[in-house]
Image (cartoon, rainbow, N blue to C red; front, side, top):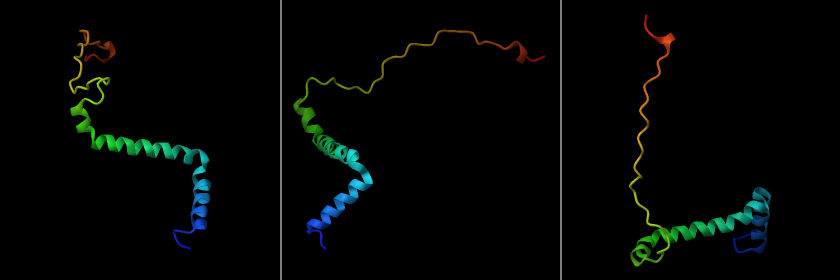
Amino acid sequence: MGLDSVWHWALLLVIAVVIFGTGKLSKMGPDLGNAVRGFKRALHGDEESKAGANPASPELTAEPEPCTPAPNTAPVRDPAAAPK
């Protein structure tokens, strides 16, 4: 029983369906496709960014927006915790 046998692949498919179920197996294909597509985009991302392939996407910056300072409030002292 080698890897080229139809019965070998049929048995592996039955075992996979029993272990994972049909719901997970149907989701696995698109997830794998999206992962491969994302990997290809990451490899060729420099070339696309130089060519301006996606002008509709906003440009991402690493600088955060300025924060507003917290309002000045005096510390609240607990009268029971005051030293005597």
